[in-house]
Length: 428
Image (cartoon, rainbow, N blue to C red):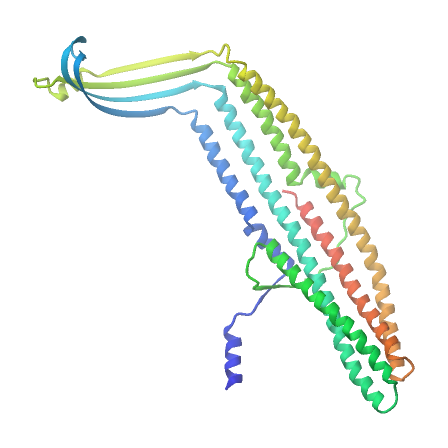
């Protein structure tokens, strides 16, 4: 009954999902908070473009007022001052329009540049998230592989201890062989505890890179064929640099600062404004009769159209200083560009160097692995025939397992650099 209940529980509980690197990258590039924030910034820039275009339209508003005046006042019907208590009601509508202000057109251009920059920044955020996920993913895989090697070693030693104890009982081996093997088992168990902790921490870091708070996933490697890249191309670094979103983002920021210089200078230019006002009113002396509201409303209608030219002459040197500050921001943004170029060049060259070194190391380890495997097979035969002591066989066996892990680790390193390079090659 207990067994049946256990099987039912296993079937009800969902199995833990296992994600490949591609699934991790697809999820992170769409759901990481940094990417979502960048997406919101793009939407904000759309609103800023709309707001900048809206400045070309007139401002229209309407109002109504109801007032009482007591004592000395102006009679609205005769326009004469007298001692009166009056009621005055007014209805009006007004439109103000900046017919010509060059700043408004420049702000539209600036808001479009800012949207372009925010689009590059979103891609940059996606790339940064991907680079972090790739690093954490392979770090987890390496730690998991090392733990697996240690578990294989420990399992093999435990079997070896049992066989050796039987051989000691029948007198084929000395008792010291058992002590030597058990001593090495203790060392491996200590390494296993450390490796298990490293694996768990690396998984936590990977989940954090994915912005996932629940440990509901496992991660697996795909059997990818090792790729190669054309590092010998003279323009390899420059090509990756120019299509990198971080580089493109800083380029658009320079354009934005240059546009701000033009916006600051636009304050030197005159502006032309227009206005239109329509109004009507109703007035009466309190306690006395007056013409009907509708009659006064029709009679007192008024329209005004006005134009104004505002020519700046002197504004306490504020425009001049704003222009100079904007120019300094352009200079500063060019230094930002140099910093970005320097950092990206370092990153690309580092990936190139690590890829080439890892590829060369992997080739050497493939040959070493085969030699270690043959050495282990021959040593196993000697150990079974009693021609090799337990400690020496333990060393040979561990060397083969270590070579196996080194080969896996080296292959992971080549794949990691390949994946990092793909992020840089993807561009925008």
